[in-house]
Structure formats: structure tokens, C-alpha cells
Image (cartoon, rainbow, N blue to C red; front, top):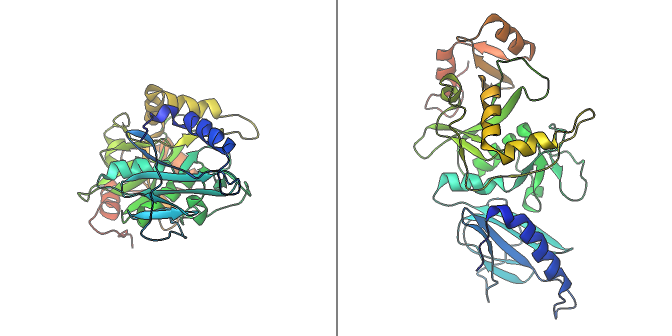
Length: 321
């Protein structure tokens, strides 16, 4: 059993797969099947077992603990974490086995995707048709065969779908800066989910962070810097538009808590709550210019008490009439 830090995991995996691919098995030259489990402890290479309880032919992105077989090779996946399997040229699978810790599970699902790419309107595959558009509001079957690459809105919608598969109530939320806008990083899409105690908490699937508070409290109490890193964080990719390359913009926020905290402070000015095709914001503490900017974006104002009633009641459905 081998454990590696998250920082060195990617390089080690590539080197390991390359070395293994050079080996020729006795089974007609077929490359060996590699299996790994990622947790907060690092990366563990899985050892095949002699038998499996049953054959796993259709792998879902969320799996129950058990014994599974891929390509006639059986593995024990009874422990929680992010699992992935690879046979060079023929097989690629990934999924999450949830555990007792909700935050560890959030970290595990972050490994299912990669934050990046310029077109936030669609998710991209890492293989096959790279421009294929996928519906992030549904858990696409492609996610079990390779990580998907997307922007904050796509990944947040995808995270909500995965959390629903885990039985965790979750919804899309967003934030918008109160400062002067630059047209590039004026806002951000996130997720609110109910924790084990029934309280709404904030989860950012793009950067793998979490706030022990609701979005309304984070913004109104200026607690944007009170985020925690999850045990596992998503990978990131390049982000280029027709006019600007944002790769270093993304990398700086992944590399430095201070830079990420500064950016969160900028964009987490006004909370936005999604319901039935529209975003709503609490209008009480905003000046006229802020109202005009938000209305120009198509967002709708509501009193804070109305926001609380509609989005923070015990009912899982919005109370908006």
C-alpha cells in the first residue's frame, strides 16, 4: 500500500502508468490494469484481489462500498474516497464511494472534474469529442469514464447533480461584486448544501473550498475569508478566450490562499439565489448604482426577510408564489 501527497500525485501517476505500459503481460500483450484511491491521506495504489463478489459492468459516478471487477481484475473498494482505474488504450473509470464525513465526500467529488476552459456554457470531455456539449444539470455518464472540464457555473450545476445522487440537498447560488466591474471576474457561481444538521453551508466546486455558514451570512457578515480547503481539491486547466489568457489568473488562486481570499472578498459582495429561471438578491443594503448594475444583468431584487423566507425555510422547495 503506497501513499503520496496530493501535490505529487499527478506526476507520480503519469510516471507509473508510463512504466506499467512498457510492461507486457502474459495475456497477449495487454497492459496491466491500474487502480488508485485518493483521500486526505494521499494517493493509494490498489492491489487486485483473488475474487470479487459480483461483476461491475455499469459503473456509476457514485458507488456503494463493495467488491468490483474491471476487465477480469477484481478490487476491494469498501473504503470511502475517489477511485480511478486505467488500462492504457482500453479502459478508464472513476467514481466516488461516500463516507461518514460529508466534507471528505465533498473533497472526493471535486476530483471528478477540472476547473478551466473558456466556454462556460458547456462541459468538455478529456477524450473523444472535446467540443461535445453536456448538460451539467444532469450527471452525465461520461463523468464515470473521465474528468470533465468546465467553468464555475457548469461545475456548480454538475456538483448539485452529484450531491443529489448522494442524497444531499443542494442548490445553485452565485455572488456578484459591489466594486467596479472589469467584465472578466465580476462574479462566481457556487453551491449551497444542507449539512448533517440541516443547516445551509457554502461549497465552491471550482476551488475546492467550504464555508461553515450560509451564503447570506457569508456575504452580509463579510466572512468571505473564513473558507476552509477541502481534503481534496479539483485540478485546474488553462482558460483562454479570444482576447485574453486566464491561465495564470486561475493558477494564482489555486497556489495562494491569500490571492484566493482577496478575490473572494471582491466577488462575494452580493449573494444571488436561483429559483425557477431567475436569480434574486437582497436589496436592503445596496445603493442605487448597485441596484442598477444587478438589474442590468437580469437579477431581481427582494427584501432580506423575503429571501430568508423563500430560501432558508425548512422546506426543500422554494416558497415563492
